[in-house]
Image 1 (spheres, one colour):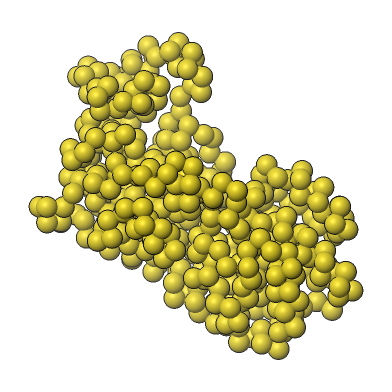
Image 2: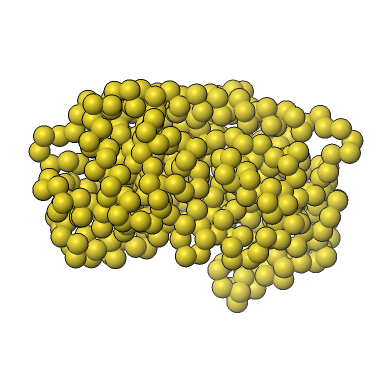
Amino acid sequence: MKIAFFTNAFPMMSEAFIANSAAALVEAGHSVDLYGIGNVDATGLSVPEVEPLHLEQSTTNIRWPGKRADRWRSLPGALKDLVTRHGASSLFQLRPDVYRRTFMDLSAIYQAAQLPAEGAYDIIHCQFAPLAEHVIKHRRAGFLSGRLVVNFRGYDISELVTAHGEHLYDHIWPEADAFIANSEYFCQRAIAIGCPEDRLSVVGSGMRLESFPFQPISEASNSDIRFLMVGRLIERKGFHIALAALARYARASGRGVLVDIVGDGPMRAELEQLAGDCGLGEAVTFHGAQSHKAIADFIRKCDVFIAPSMTCAKGSQDGPVNTLKEAMAIGRPVVGTRHGGISELVIDGETGLLCKEGDVDALEQAIDRILDMQADWPRMLATAREVVENTYALSRTTDDLIGVYNSILTPPSSTPGDSTGLSKEAA
């Protein structure tokens, strides 16, 4: 199969699942081109295992000026690039009635000018739902062709729907040939806002289990207990709740704690201030963004992994947290929240512990409880590894993904959203 991935930018440090998926498809004998159309900078590759495949050689990160005035100034050059790549007739493909908003803000012109001269694919896979608007328009205009797959991964089916309403994706439903959610939770959310259930599948974000060999811990440290949290430093990750809970646990138990926080984001200064204010001070170390290899090393050094995700004020939610999978794969006890897709990964009392999201007292109690259950850790950690292997092994998720692709390559004639995308105008 000839496949195109559309994402915001590639590679991104926080999106190892996209690099893993693309690499697995290439290793299975398929061709994968990657397009970044979010007009953002790529942050780098966090999966060294895929470096030998040189995915950068099949990657195009499309950029255009952020300010409207600069777009107009650079427009002649973009039009020249468009004609050079697609021929003079491409000027007539850029129809305002097809592109609408993206024609008026000129982003469509800059994107089309950097799309390949031969844009025919078997599968066009939008890794995040908001990108489908652009792809649908380019497909209708004739710059792209292929069966369209749209993924729901988290913010696109939670925060954006909260902000823009449940009809946000109405223009996509008749256009796409298949939809994918990364968890049953987001699958149900998609159905609730109108996603056609008969074209929707659940395919988890796969992980390279060989990068996270099972090395279970037998008991917590006799000295300071080391806790680990990994993720973007944003409200949704709930690290502010966890710091408060860990401070309470340290005071109540008399135990020393060490806290490693891996990741970066807009709340870093606030969290650093909170660590000092709640009495943890130098016990908390902020390590910034790290590679997958480094994250695995942090997991091996910790006693307990905490994933305190919560629904943020803007409505954003998490799926099954990827670093939580990694901690379970390596063999560390985990504490998560009843939030989004986490409950599909962590089975309370079986593969880890769950508590109410956004609740300092509940999280403190869960931390205390997981440390009281050390005699059960061997059973719990073995079960957790088995769940990850059975559900999220990259070979399994890749087979599932290829199954979705194959199911739409020879569809019945009545399948909505043909390769030219003529069924309904995108917004």
